[in-house]
Amino acid sequence: MRVCVVVRFLGFLMIVISLWMICPFVYAVSNAGEDTVPFALSIGIGIFSGAVLYFLGRGVDMSKMRAREAMASVALSWIAASAVSGLPYFFHGSAPTYADAFFEAMSGFTTTGSTILQDIDAVPRGLLLWRGLTHWLGGMGIIVLTLTMMPILGVGGFNLFTAEVPGVVHEKITPRVRQTAVILWLIYIGLTLIQTIILLLGGMGIFDAITHAMGTISTGGFSPHDESMAYFDNAFYDWVVTFFMFISGANFVLHYQAIRGRSLRSFFRDPEFAFYFLCVLSLSLLTSLGLYMSGTSESIHQCLRHGAFQVTSLITTTGFVTTNYEIWPFFSQSLLFVCLFLGGCAGSTSGGIKQIRLLILFRHAARQLTRILNPRAVLPLRIGKKAMDLDAISSTLAFFGLYLLVFVVGIFGITLFEPDFFTAISGVAATLGNVGPGFGTLGAAGNFASQAAGAKWIYSFLMLCGRLELYTVLILFSRPYWNEGVILSKD
Image (cartoon, rainbow, N blue to C red):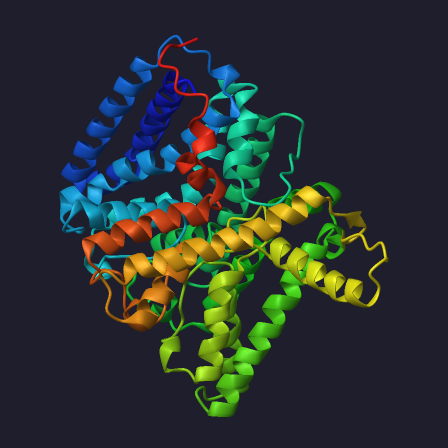
């Protein structure tokens, strides 16, 4: 692995992230906010650090980036971006320690939506705008963003793309990776603008409309209010956000196909989307039924409104809340806890296990049951009309095993700092799945501020693992990855 390739890429990325800070910096200056100086310091440090790294990697051929270098670049880029973007929180004092600042930034870029900020409504709006931008940039992926701005990557671009974009099978809309990245970002921006306009037409203020649209389309869930969507207590806003959370949890390739073909057939023909739709619908109805039977909500509409919103929010790993779901009946809470693990579709902005993996697992289990009765039967595992190859099946099963292993180890790590076992479980589930809120002190009415510094670093690592779907991060700790050694030269 050529270190200079990784160093140069990280330097470029840090400069890009620092330049994005200019947007909230200008907003802070125009409002004479107390966050102006923190942004100025952060931009200066970020650009200087990035320039140093970029200079150290000068002369390297970036077009020949190999798989090992791509994996290191992707994993370390999210750490570098969080290290820089957390500086404004730290310099302003909203984050009392750098561990808090890094946690908030990592939560933003990984679109987790967990927070350590207390009294969010009192935080300067420049910082809240930056907070919203971090998960909007991270939603589509900071590597995908970089690919649109750095065409010199050439061949190495595909290795970066496959190392970051989640899913079992990686789809390119066009033969060129950069062109694919540009198309994905155009769709992403378009959906954000459409939701913003609809919220504005519904009477929401422009700042709230923009930040909540960025939080919805990115499935990040950062809100500029402590109460999240419950701040508005508006049924129209809730249904609009529910709809856009749902479509943001779908594969963005389907959005492209629908726009290009001017038809919704691409959605109905996709087996993963059909499974995703049934999953969201059934869990929403069951959760709403639990609310209605317990008398928690006053009307059927309220039960459906809160049930559908919260289920969609957690399945898509957005993390917005409309009410304190921890006072709901245990039946409805149990369903929400299951939602922490599911995730949206592959190729979407959501985290979690992903619907395609669940579909493959269920089909594989059904096939094994049939084989018990008919041992000689040849039963290909089909998803729609496509037969899945053995590599995809074994990769899916390995992912489930690895996910469970990281989940259990994460719980052990958190219990070193957190005495409440259920809080530890929900915290690990919420961060590893990039969901945001959990249960207990980490639920809808709480946050991660009370967690120990050590726990926050573990949570930050789990967020990174969840966003990059384990393999890209954990492979850096494996012996085979380093077998060929490290090359310090630029050749």
